[in-house]
Image (cartoon, rainbow, N blue to C red; front, top):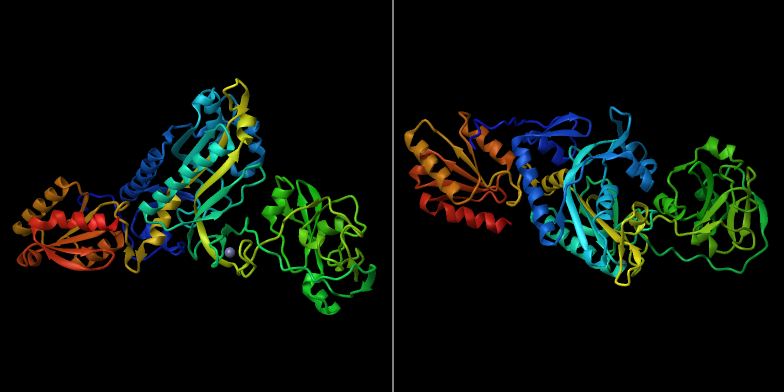
Length: 567
Ligand SMILES: [Zn+2]
């Protein structure tokens, strides 16, 4: 491809709205163009990268034994109502009506549709296991699209779904998908770590995310430097600091004027924060919920939502707290009725706690679980934080930011049951198939490739995903010797199976070199009267900046070596 013909507009300066390096470089290198919030057009150069990433994914999924299918993006809304997710997805689901006023949704994911297909094709245990995948457009009405290609409203996902006869068999399908993902990210040049992830309230088992660690990520990951434990902050477990032991004492009411926070209260009463119970209020599916946790800990809202199998959970504001008859700053579970009470184990096994007296300016001391109050539900709802003890080995957990690149999930039978994916076993008995699902966002991966592969001058594409293998900068093309040598080099590279972008524009050498660095092809060849005088072309490796003069005769093997070393 000659650059004089290529639809491409590079920018000297990144637009002010772009904060992430990948967002800046995508725009500066002219790979994408924004259309509206969360919607991007791909230019010819950007689309070549997209297609190469897609091909890596396809090759590795095929290699893992998965079979490619293609499902509609437009879904009858009945399918989403059948699974119960029409409501659960809320405003994220794009909805529309056809000319006959029938309801449809633009698919944000495809568990329902793949289950529809599987229910009509899988009949017997002999049909299992099977993993189906597609690389397809998804639509999500995100409240805050951001970061260029990081969070979009229309995007492409490789989504795969496995169907097995049992949980042990699912473990194998899950491992195959996991291994494929490891190869995909390695080939694309995105370093990731697998971390334990939240599996939601729908009855799934294991779930792991592949996370690219980056200061620009919006997820928090907790890592143990001692044993390698790694989990999303929403999911992470930790060892709670032990309670302060003592024999239960009689309960007492004490005046605590003006003491609203746990820190103030602990100081006022000269007790450790571990000797206090914190009250937190939520509105869960429309009803008030009282949550009790030890004063030194915080509530993990994802764990709480899962424990309550809730669809909707929001923190209650002060007006809501008053309306529920509670006293903010002095609320406690003793004597509380007519409300769901959730307790973290930390307040159940700690004796003689300080808790609110439900009377402004008063607290109770020596409150003991079981004797003085009971919870409707005791569940781990505590948030792990940096510095907390690893659940496996006790070392202090480290907190890092990251971007979720892929997700593998043992779904279980929830969709099979609601969508009717059943099979007959050897004895002729009917069972729901055990499902797994596995996703990778293609655009987000493209952004991560750039986040992981750039320097101050531009992108440094890994060889496997670069839009072109070789970028030729031709200078003084009006000289016959240069023009003839260029034809020869382009032909030889093309015969050798390499893709080539040639800068044949009449611009200065300085502008061409800057653009070559910005666009980031792994190998740059400069062809000029001077390089020909020196006996060939000047070859420069984009990543290392190393340059050498290579004679035309040895060019193909040299380029081949450099590109295969890179991948
Ligand atoms: Zn550990």
